[in-house]
Amino acid sequence: MAKQNGTRPVTPPDGWTPVAETRTACERLAVLGTTSPAPHLAAPVVAMVHGLEGHWTGWQPLAGQLAGRCHIYALDLPWRAGNHYRWRHHGTPAHWLREALALVPEPVDVLIGHSFGANAVLEHLATPGGAPQSRAAVLLAPFFRPDTLTADWPLYEAALAGFRQVITDGVRVGLGERARRLDSDVLAAMADTTVERIGPVGFLSLFLQFTGTTELDLGGVTVPTLVLAGENDTSLSEDRAAALAAAMPAATVRRHPHYTHFCHEEQAADVGQDITAFLTDTTAFPANKPISPIFSPPFSPQKEPLMTELLDGTLTTPVGRPRYEGANIRTWIGFKHFMYLTEEAVLQYFRERGVGAETLYHTYGLGLEIVDHSVSLPATLGIDDEVTAVVEPGRSKPGHGAPFKVRLTVQRDGETVTVLTGKIRVALVTLKDAPADVRPVPAHLEPYVVPEVAALADAAGHEPQIVAEGDLEAVLTPPDSNAFLWSWRIPYFYCHFSDRLQHSGYVRAMEEVVDRFLDDRGISIRTMLDERGWIPVVSRARVHMLADAFMEETLHTVFTVQEIIKDVMYTAAFDTYVHRDGRLVHTATGSIMHGYAVSRGEQAGSLAEFDDITRAALLGGAR
Image 1 (cartoon, one colour):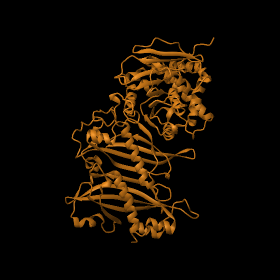
Image 2: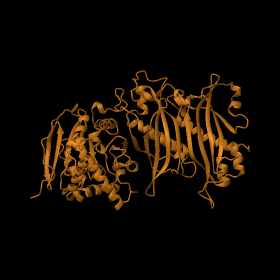
Image 3: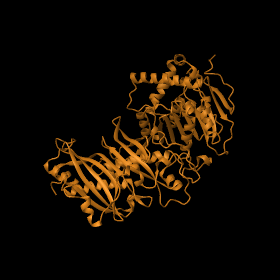
Image 4: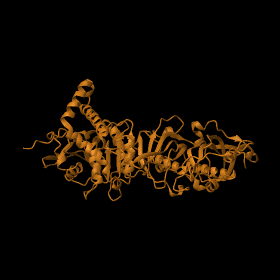
């Protein structure tokens, strides 16, 4: 007679009731449901999938956070604690998950899986085989192997060490308050005993599921999926998170500094907020099914933000391909469109927290303004590259806005290549013509709100100067300054919020003033391409806003080459001004590092070395 697989069914705790149970291939499957009523019959149905050596009761803390918002079912699956791992000979984790879902008495809208259970959900999404699919999924602390990570013995040993750590953490979490009173050696011995009981077959079940993620067709998954993990959880390191986001466009990947591998138990309140915010997204719940008010579309005027902290964790998200407009030299992308992609990544960070630019505008009368943006470009970007962004919040300073670090990566020849590292600061500017029915700004956004860009702390020291209009050129381009002046009218399509020049407008201005400067000095881009085969290369750029510049004002743009570095690069300053009410207002400053690459001949691919003509043109010796 076959042994019972895992612990025997126990009496459900208060608030839960048995729904269904079956036995097949010597395995027991069960479904339990909460007894607390959902808001109404059309509320979303959630099924929770526990991890390896876990138990359905581990979902109680998170279920408590979601109670009253949806119908919740917990699945009791064959890989529960104490099982004998015979199930792996009779079906994949996705197979057993589908068998359990068939016991749920109503269609499941949301699948939430933890660890091994998250990977079972991932396999189910990627290999549907005609099985009914949920409308959204949440993966907590999943495992993922990029195709750049070879399945070799070092990986096996690293995975085994990680497995032991997860089991140790699981024992600690399972003991609750008792773990604090235990000697560390006793806790380690308990974990060792658990690992020995699980044995190599149990570990191999996890290892094979982990290594097999590379073979899943994640690009074909269309179910909106939220992936949550801790920044210190090795199961989904930064590189693996970026690779997962790149492989699975339907996924939003977020890593929080304080989340543990068992975040659904130890940080249940925060996880509950993350999930609830995600399920407000209309892409997760299309209009063909009514949903409860708490999952209403994020732009509803009645919606209160669910987040209590803005700078709360890292976001890894695909940002797509660069725009075709940016491929000006062959199929390479210019620096401007690198900066556009980082802008999109930061905007997505705000959207994921329920305070996207549209919500900020209509609900709180705030304009999301990128006020400082610096980038370093260590590698090229091609027109067909698919780009993944990692957005990491920094430590904010009073009066400086919300800081972020951004990294852009692409996949090339089986490797993850970083094409950009950068820093961005965002301010929330009070709008002059805000909607009449705006609501009070939430406390977690208040530190980043300013009445105007000039009110930021780092704009001090750039006070307007009294200058007569006839003296502008003399003031902005004094003799022997090597400064180049370009004055132009700010068009509406460089602006936003019907009012002022936006960050991307300054980036466009920087690109154009470089082009105008080089043409003025007799070394235009076309000239250098035709005569020398030199291709322009930008390795660094920065735009820092100091004050508002308004639609249809004249923007006086000053470009000044400052230094030539090793005869292969030059640095230049970028400054913009408006003349308003007799005062010269410094609206932005910035810098760029520029050079050339050789495109033909024996030196093709190397940096071009400046000759006397080029040096003289850049430094003002030739006009």
